[in-house]
Every structure is written in C-alpha cells, then in structure tokens.
Image (tube, rainbow over all chains, first blue to last red):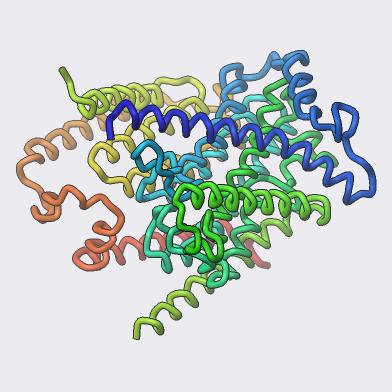
Length: 342
Length: 171
C-alpha cells in the first residue's frame, strides 16, 4: 500500500470519526432533553424546527455568541487550558476503537480503525486518567472556592473509580490474552460476547463509566445545591460549552468502548451467512452504532431515574464495594481459566 | 538528512530538559507540577522510541495520570504562596547547593562508562521486542520474579504505612 494512499484514508477516517463524535454528542443533548421530557411526562424542546431538530444548533450558536468572561483574579493561561484539555482528552480515546470489519475498496483492504496498537486498552486508560487534568486545572485556575471544591470532588471521584474500572477490565483481558481492542472484538465473533462470561465485570465497568463521565447518579461535581455550579462555576460562553460538550463526547466514547469490549463490537449473530465482505462491514458498523446508541440511552435513562448519591456513599461504593467485588471477579476468572486448562 | 526517530529524539530531549528546568524555576508551584507532567510525557516518548510501548503507557498512567494528580491535589489544597513559605536561612541554602553539586558529581561518576558495562543480562537487552507486553511479562514472571515480588512487598509496606498514618485515633 502506498504511503500517500495510507495517509489519505487515515486522514479521512480521523476526520470522519471526529466529526461523527461531535455530531453524536451534539444530538445527544437533544436526545437527553427529549428523553427527560418523556420520562417526566412533558414534551421537551419542540420549537426549533420539527421535533426541535435544530435545538442543538441554536444552543451551540447561543453559547458562541454569549459574552465571554474571564475572571480578573484567575490564572488566564490555565483558565483557557482547562476546557481545551477536557475536549482534547475526550476526543482522543476514539482512536483505538474498531468501528467495523475491514472494507475492501479499489483492491485495498481498509481497516475501519484509526490505530490498531497492541496496547489499545491501556491507551484508553492513559487518556482517561489524563481527563482529570482538564477539570482540576479549570477549577483551580478560576480562583473561586466553589470551583476548587467542585474540582477536588470531581477529580477524587474520577481517581477512585478508575481503579475499580481497571480491575474490572483485567478479568476480560485475562480471558482475551490481548490488550488490542481489535483482537478483543474479533474474539467475540457471532454472539460469543464477553458480557456472557463477565456479567459482574460489565456491571462494575458500567457503574464506573457513569462515575468517570460525571453523570448522574454520580454527578456530585456539579451538585448545585451544595456547590453553586461545580468546577465550571466561573466559566461562561463556549468555554462552559466545551466542558458540557466534553461530557457528551465522553459518554459517546465510553458507550463505544463498552459495546466493543463487552457487547461484541461490530459482531452480530449469524454474521457468517453474509458472504459479501463490504456488505458485512457496513452492517457491522450499523450494528455497532445501534449498540452505542443503546448505551447512550442507558446513560440517560439512569440519569432521569435515579437520585444523586451522597458524597460519602459514593466513596464507600467505590472503595469498599466495587474494588473488592472486582478483585473477587479476577479470582473467579482466574479459577475458571485454570479449571478449563486442567 | 536526519531520520524521523532522530528528530523525535532530539525534540523530546529538548522538551524534557526545558520542562525539567521550568519545574525548578517557576515561581508558581502549580506551574511546576504541570511542567513536571510535560517532562513525564517527554520521557514516556523516549520509551516509545525504544519500542517499549508498555512502559510508555504505564509511565503515563502511573506518573502523569495518578501520582501527579495527587501532587496537584495537595498543592492546590495547601495553596502555597510566598507569604506562607517558611523562610530558610543562608547557611541552609548554601548547604543545599553544595549537596546538590555533590549528588551531581556522584551521578556523573556512576554513569560514566555505563554504556559499556551493564548489570542487566545482555541477551535481554539484545531482543528489540523486550518492551512489548508479552515479552516483558514473561521476563518479569520468570527470570526476575524475585525482585518483582520484593518490590510489591515494598508497595504493600507503603500502603500499610499510609493507612496507619491516615487512621483516626480511636480513644
């Protein structure tokens, strides 16, 4: 494969993945409000266009044209760096997710994955662990005690739940014997999905994913009754928009990651019956996105159903329940693998 | 014409040295911590150049992602500034300079000629794929299993110590 071709299709793929993440994040805001409306027996936004379809554009436009306020006592550079880092880390994780089976076009095999690195899962963890910086830097640079408290809450929550998240994935990695996301997905061919072998691991993972994205019932960082607005109290205009938007991108990417690692990614039952490779690839992508949307729906469903946790309950759940449970899960998995190999 | 890994090496080294210097010279302790994070990234980049992908990502997760976040935490909560900083007298500063120079001397003397005589078994270094997860794991759990387990005891000791210090006094 020539270098030009390689660079060309990678560029197109990167642009597409980036654009689609932004688009889905944008329309996830509308979906969230519509769903909230449905669950609370009201209509939700319906003024801008049919069924409120232009609402995200209006919101985005409003945020861009609002007055931009940078507090005088803040650290200017870090104040701007905070939301930039939040967006940057949110967009980076999607690089290792395989979006579908290989396409065959013009005599070339085109993998629908930006980078198949052999440490894909660890890369995701690296990026997730860096996500804390956006929140912390933003909260501290605002020079406001409510922001600082919100930032400290958010980051201690994220650090605590990262541990249980990593431990719950180790059981999956023990079974797959690989750190490459592509290989993990390929092993779940057909309906041989990991969730059937690791139900406990999946449960722990999804709880931690809620906590990592700062979504309800773990949205304590922006607990308005106690903290005014959380770590983004001092932010206005599009900088605030970036923080809020990063949350939706994170939600999309973690849904994609869960779908890939636990729910078989682009695999679906009876996929061997389809002989045409390109048709299979397109169907695979469609199935993968259906799974992603299902998880995004679960995120929203939980948000509008469960009340917020208290802070000590949150820490207790993370450290005293989820981490021991995931260690037990690792031991059980290890035992099962040993029995199988006897 | 330089090749790409050479360019990357010099770029990363410059970045690492610059950020390491800025850690020492910045006035604001929060800036120091952030420069240290940049420095860790540059060093992780060197691991990538050596084809040690696992070390690269673990270095980022552990140092940049966990340890430096806790550092930042502490410094933000303490909110260090010039007034609250304890004033050191001139003799203490002089002693610090002298001992720093002595440390540099010892390090240079110890590392001089390190490229020819190494403590590591040679065949482990010769394998260019030693940095990949599978090979590194095999080496750690077969040949280096004793030092590996002993270092884990060190970590447990540190954890027990933290719990002891952090525990509220009952009575």
